[in-house]
Length: 358
Image (tube, rainbow, N blue to C red; front, side, top):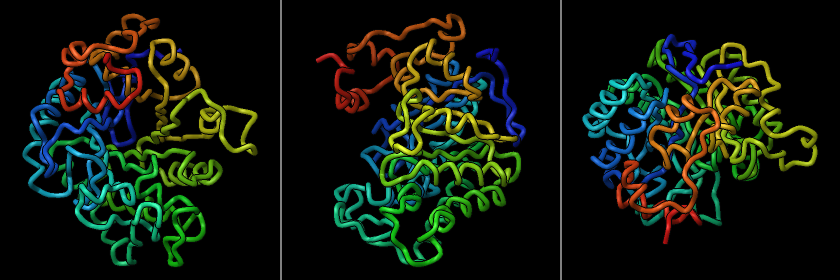
């Protein structure tokens, strides 16, 4: 039986003190130019203090045009380094690994935020996004790599590449969205090419002692479970990443596609041979009981979102009591303030039905 406070050693050599990672959570708390705010600093460092083995900052955009939400933390410019350096230093004081998530919203970038037409692998009439030129695809790849180098300069011990949730790398993976005719479109191999090139570029530029993860989701936005599993198998076989972060929305659900029913979504991944690559999953892991259920299924560590919002010290509470149940919803604004959320973040959380008391 896996102990919750087992130390895990990644291929890069970095050690995680327990089996809890803070999910990269949208919180809209930073400055509009992407510079870290005191509110975001407080929110994240409080989670490190609360016992998370990895404190992952929110999706941080690698190009100005890739901004996905107001108050998003940026990593596309050297002006972000000072704030990020302050953040990572405090996270590491609590023996938590500081990991940045690298992100580009693509067609999901709101025009009113970026003040120009959003971009996508192919033209998208629903969002008004335009297709990236071949040269712009190459630039996108290079900007993901440059952001990882910037993260390392800022004291981060690693990065996660955001290839999930219908953002730009997920858009490349989708045969419905990606209709390119060049080497970045067509077959699954071509559509996933940019992810493998980013992985290789980050590893070459940041070294073997840098934690590198990839987040993928297997459903939605035109993604096919079978194709995502192929991408995972290739990432594992190349032995160039430390972990795969599978965002399942609900870790206990069955697949959407009829042909893959018969075992739940999680089992499609736990049945794979991960070799030296670690597996974490996110989705509906909200109590001590659900943490234990996931870890029983050959998952190395859990990625926690909502429970980490409700309790900054969720890892410590579950390690002390495997039956820990978080506070019942809806919760008061006062409770969330005590847990390190700013007024801006609380206002954002009011969009989640039944989460914040009226």
